[in-house]
Length: 199
Image (cartoon, rainbow, N blue to C red):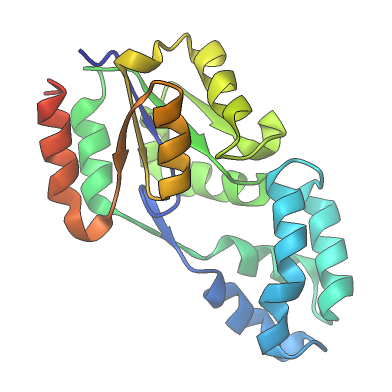
């Protein structure tokens, strides 16, 4: 019996492509386009683990890549990288009211501000654990333990849906029911839900 369902966001509820942001800002950067992802990666980790706030991230990013535009444009480029995955949005709507629904995601304040306001699906969730607020990222055990405590979950009666195998393996090792999501095989999530007795 499953009492609660926990969703990741990236490539489960929303597709994302950091390449879109890089294409948009590259003409205004002193750094070569090929080097921008490498320069951004450590800052991205600091942002998503809560060691950098969004405003600090934007300033440091601009300095490290030689961005000559406005920080508001850099912020918009960093935000506007998402597309909804309609199949999972429909599933969330279907499960709403039948089981408590929660979010557990590696993300940051810049992205969260954007997607929470843009996509109505996020209004269907009872709560969220975001890595930048928890100060720890998946697949570290501490973020799953934080979610269990915050939401009052019983891992053995919880389904966790994520697209990354390390995150799935970490949750499974802590006793969660899991599903490794692939948008191209959405039907396997439906089958897994049926196996677990979900409507």
